[in-house]
Image (cartoon, rainbow, N blue to C red; front, side, top):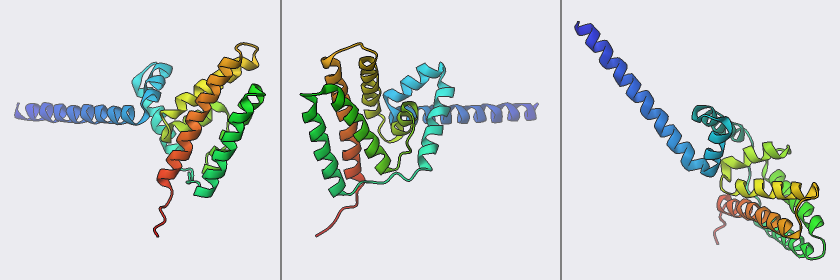
Length: 182
């Protein structure tokens, strides 16, 4: 009888520990990934599958050599972005393509592998969970335009979304770049 009670108490304690660990992991993932967490849960249809996918994303990114860009390179990229924005007035479609290409170059320079949009979004979501929503929106708006839907206003919105990711990539880089002391 005593052994039965001991076994039940141990089983309850193990269940409570497991449940607490799961809740803590969920809370950490939700905090880290923000809106991407909810999007993953909705996409997978259940929390556990979504959490496994998010953890796998983080593990894939850990294997990459994501590196900060030097200050001079960040400054040059910022000038290139200014040129892309200026081009928008005369040729919005070309500016959107240039914005996308510039972002691809920044991602490549930082160490993200070239891949399709879905892979880029997955990998970027680990370090840039808020800004990746902008990237997704920009891609969708640009694709709509390519299909003949939408006009200049949609392209302007796409450029704004691209800029949000671009700014996040460069500013995050500044935070990780080594500080030079004088």
